[in-house]
Amino acid sequence: MDKTDRLIEQTERLLSRVDALQQDMRQLQADLNSHILALGQHLNRASKRPGPSPIKPLSSQERRSTPRRKGNPVSVAIADAADESETIQGWVLDRSAGGLRLLVDEAVPAGTLLSVRPSKAPPSFPWVQVKVKSCYPERKSWNLGCQFVQKMSWEDLQLFG
Image 1 (cartoon, rainbow, N blue to C red):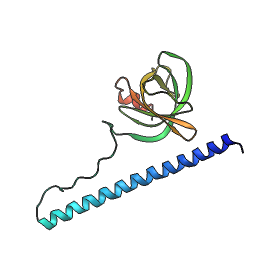
Image 2: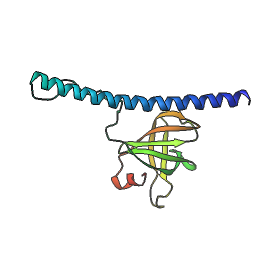
Image 3: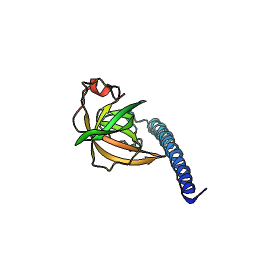
Image 4: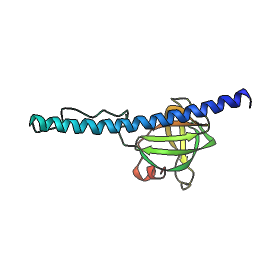
């Protein structure tokens, strides 16, 4: 095993640890929020003051204005917004009214405009432009956080899963 293979293997182990730690953090945050709500209810009963809890749950790091929906991955063709003749394949991992999270094989810099089209969409379905807001590695692929350039109709959004 050469040095490159060892480094790749070590990187994959570290990414797996990060994934596990992130999952543990989400669970801890949920547990802490439940505890905080129970404590607030207890304090209200103890002080005999009706009303909302004086203690608020921790806010999550969610910054979306619309909720994210997960589902089965949907295959999409992805192209540079300026030239849709050359495409790569990607997968929609989750979606919201504001954008998509795509899984691709190559990194794409934040700020890049892309055109995306579901692989199984009817021929009349147009390319949809998205702006890459974030790009981070996931094992041997890349996650792209993308924002729709124009508001999508519910019917069109459904083709993305």
